Amino acid sequence: MIGKLKKLQNGADIRGIALENNDKEVNLTAQEIYYIGQGFIKWIKEEQNNSNQLKIAIGMDSRISGPKLKKTLIESISKTGCFVYDCDISTTPAMFMATVLENYECDGAVMITASHLPYYYNGLKFFTKKGGCENEDIKRIIELATYKQTNEFIRSGKVEKANLIDDYSNYLVKFIRRDVNSKTNYCKPLKGLKIIVDAGNGSGGFFVDKVLKQLGACTDGSQFLNPDGLFPNHIPNPENKEAMKSIREAVIKNNADLGIIFDTDVDRSAIVGDDGLEINRNSLIALISAIILEDHPNSTIVTDSITSTGLKEFIESKGGVHHRFKRGYKNVINESKRLNYEGIESHLAIETSGHAAVKENYFLDDGAYLISKILVKMAQFHEEGRKVTDLISSLKKAKESKEVRIGINKNDFKTYGETVISELEAYVNEVEGWYLSENNYEGIKVFCKENRGNGWFLLRISLHEPLLPLNIESNEIGGIDKIISNLLPYLGKYTDLNIDKLKLNKIDTNN
Figure 1 (spheres, rainbow, N blue to C red):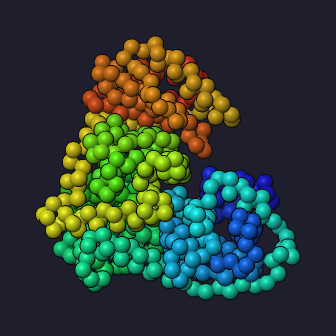
Figure 2: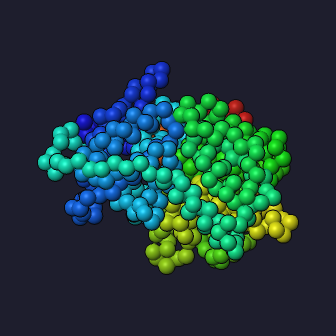
């Protein structure tokens, strides 16, 4: 059993196939959930040296496998003697907040979700008052999971329904009113603004009635708000082209001032301006950086590795320090925490995927809180006759940008990929007009002068898949072609790399 459970670990989460789908074998059943739940309780008692009755909150996103898995998880955890809050449809950030919000203050929380993955997946995310579990915590939870009922779990706990999403929404509303400097708790700082939401049938539909309308916004034109775990309209994912096209079209059709899109469990988000322009990836990082730097000048902004040169220049122009780190939302959050621990002020950790964590909010990657920070500024600007997007009018955007995921046809793909990357350094030194970045926390980033592509590229190993993601940016039309033409002779030497997509070279434009 332990071997099966180990295969379900996906970094700091549990993820697996919960429903039959073509050739996909189900590996996350009620049985696995039952024992992982008991392992989580054992882990908390071990970590906290706590022999008292624990309070645990459990919620889920809209996936159709969620109710069955939630029922099993509640049964598993209540049999350990815990007091369990059944939070029903919730969000990942709200589940963490159950550990700190007044009237909850749980010892732990579990969110049943697989984020943006297809409907037949599901998984678990775990929290304590310290934040989300780390990779090593998940390993220990799995080690503590067991087939057999042990003598330490001999009494039944209590299960109580909770309106966590209501309390979490009130937390956001109060925060927005406070920061807009509202005179009363009943003021409507978003009155006169049309703001629409595309929840993609995930868990984010609550934001319309419980947050935006409470603040006075007109939300006519919001779409796909009802939870539907089959995601019939589009995948709820701010990185998905179809999803972004959907919210762009809705903004333009409804003459909205702003469009908001959430991923399934609302730990990520993006926005669209009134002109239908996507504000995600580098643009979103720039926008929230500008807002944070107003309150915390000189703060270090930690991002993942594939951010643009224009973003770095923008952050520095606002008085901040750009610290480009590794891909992975846990990596950027933990790096920001580390900097603060060492006395280097860092108030924002954000990944281009839309994961954003702010120091003032427990360093929780919370898509709704990110949007709330933007709404505060939007309300303030509205009174002045300005747009919140004015904050990033000086952000320089690349003429071309592209990501190619190069397949590795090797069982030991990590070793093979590391060889490709390590030997690339010597090749770069032979190419006139190319030079290595000073800091490479993952893979290799190479800058290319005007006659050699006028931009940069980053080659790295995927965290979990047999892939070498290649990100390229150029400040001239045709620059990516130049960079690829110089890379192909090198990559072509490695016969176990699939470089067909590079040869096709279809350019995508990103923000």
